[in-house]
Each structure stands twice: as structure tokens, then as C-alpha cells.
Image 1 (cartoon, rainbow, N blue to C red):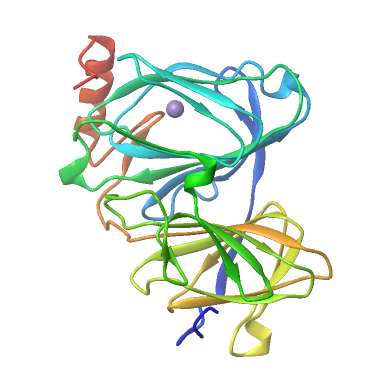
Image 2 (spheres, rainbow, N blue to C red):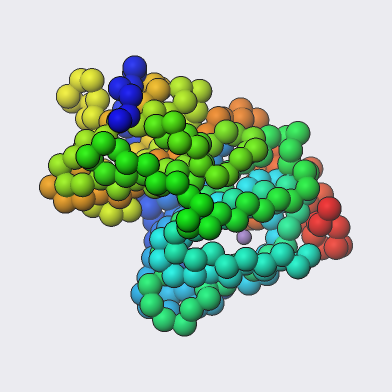
Length: 289
Ligand code: MN
């Protein structure tokens, strides 16, 4: 069973994902990284892509660079193939996760490995602290069966991609912001309590159903529905109650870096000068370590 939280975190802001497209024309919902919600330290971007129409995804994300942060892909349905310029490849199938630390630089493509059917997943961008922005790239490809699933009493279950849930630790390790990344399923009308390190920025993103995030004072309890992010305030846990249908959500948390953010497309550094350097390195073949 989950241990009761000492101080419940309440929803301080609700952000609705915005329909947009990226890559070579992949339709997606941008939740973090839009003009109204640029970033929430240490998280720089959150996209949900979900379509059963291949026209919405088939163009994929052809070769593009990254420097200075991490990209986290988590798949619910369908498959994506990852391929980079130094020969790393990987198949991201339903239920798998890839935590990619771009560090000094990678150039890669992320392409659907299917021509029809549902493609559904998320990409989260996690910032790196200044001291790690130019670290060697690192991949953690986590197969579906390597992601532990934890029962939440009778209420439902959580897949632990990163961090800890009820004493079970996820497979991702060695990440600067000590992340928590849970994929939670709650039965209709069920309630769960989940611990979150009090030092961390945290949010819920609902991707199916609807739920209430409970507060000690009833008027602070907020409802969220699919496509909405609830940013959480201070505390060390959260209590979520599903509506009359089941609910599925991501619970994500990370230690804030409290450093300046200079971003330009696929480069995220601390200063404008470092961005200019990154663009110059990319153009002149020096992006890779
Ligand atoms: Mn990418």
C-alpha cells in the first residue's frame, strides 16, 4: 500500500495541451513548450502524439540535432525507430521508454515503424545542469518488460519508468534531476496516494478519463480531464480520485535546476553565446562529441 502523504500537493495551475505539428509534419498536442507555458524547471517540453491516421505521423522526425538536455520518449501504442549519426539504433515499441541524454550533441531521426494503426506516446524534454550540458551522449532504452508495474492497493497500478513508487525503483538511473516518471492507471472511483520528493517540481498529465486531485481544503480540489496538465504546488505527495470511469495519467517530477535557460529549437543552453556556439558547431560538423 502507498504510505499516506504528509503534505498533499494541490493543483496550482491547469494547462491544456495545444494542437500543433512538429518534425516533418507530425500532428501532436504540445503541453509544455508552448508560448503560454514555455517551461517549468527542469521540464522544457511535453508532447503527446496520438493518431490512428498515418497521415498524421508517417512523416516522422527526420534527422535533427540536440544539445544540452535530455529527451524522454514513452510509447503507449505503435512503434518508433530511433537512429543516430554514430550508428546507434533502437526500436521503441508499445510500453517501452527511451531516456536519451543528448549532452554535447547528437543528430538523430525518430520515425514511425508502421504504416497504419494507432501511434500513441509522449516526448518529454528534461534540462541538464550547466555542468552536464556538454557530457557524452547516453541512451537508456528500457524494454516494456523492464519497466516494473506496482499495484496501488485495489485502486489500480503504476508503471515505474523512473524514480520510486511504493519501494519499487524504475530502470532509468543516473539522471541529474533525480526524476520520477510514473504511468498510472486508476479504476473508476478509486483513489490513490503517491509520494513525490518535496524538493521537486511535479505535474500530472491526464491522457485518458478524468480525475480529481484532492486537497486538504475541499475548495482547492481540482478536476482534470484528458489533455490537461495539473501543475502541483509544494508538498510531498498527491492524492488522486478517478471519476466514474477509469483514468490514466503520467506523474512526472524532477529537481529544479534554478539556472538561466537559453533555448533555440533543439538546443537548450544557459546563455545566448552558448546557443550561437551550438548552432555554429552544428553547421560546421562539431556538434558530436
Ligand atoms: Mn529528437
